[in-house]
Length: 60
Image (tube, rainbow, N blue to C red; front, side):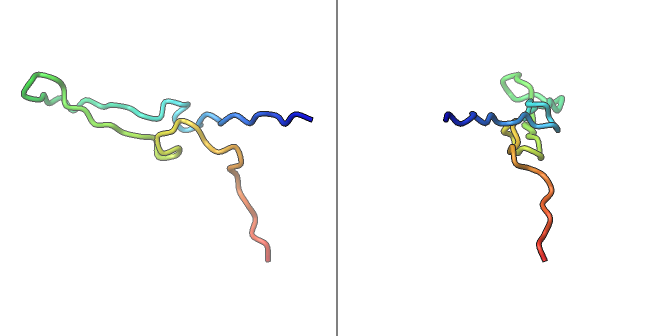
């Protein structure tokens, strides 16, 4: 029997937009804007989360 294909879930924190570039207002010598690259801390910049994430109870 064929197994279902598991797709990666989209990150709830960033909605799949894992990286943002923020302009600082400053300019480089060639006139291009200085930007900071910021990644989502929840998915670490991938845009997806693991399908098996959830709370796990400790046995004992």
